[in-house]
Amino acid sequence: MKKLWTTMLAVMLLLLAVLPVSALETQRPWRSAVMEMRKNRLDNQELGTENKRLRLSIREQLIELKESGQTLEDSVKLELKALTEQLKEKAALLKATQGDIRELTIGLKELIEKKETEEIVAIYNQVIEIQEYRNGVLKEINVLLNKIKELLP
Image 1 (cartoon, rainbow, N blue to C red):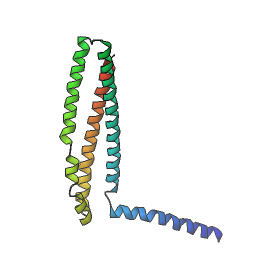
Image 2: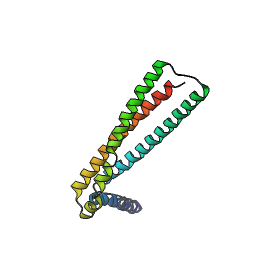
Image 3: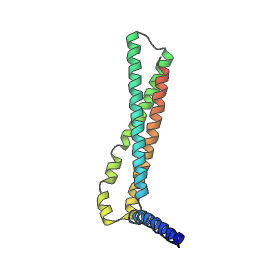
């Protein structure tokens, strides 16, 4: 009898724990997209922080190089120039997508209130695509910055 009550109590607790989660999923089917967007935003912020750290490190190396009076070989200068041009191109790609997410999400609150599920999910998927694109560009920029850092003495 004790086992029966214990088992029933365990099943009831399990159902109570599962029901709110499944209720949330039926109310907000876009929840997983929101979680992915948050993760992407954090990833992009981390990449941006790494980007800033690399830029500062390169700047310090250039200042030290200038203060020491050393000059770079012509081949290194050419490589640095090519990498800098690539960086400018990548920065232009980032700038081209700047503000796109904000534009997409302007009317989102109204859609949520109206419970336009398909439109909400479509907007979130577009935001995720933009975030992933920006993530890739930021990674490419960081690779280029690392190459520049390695070229400097």
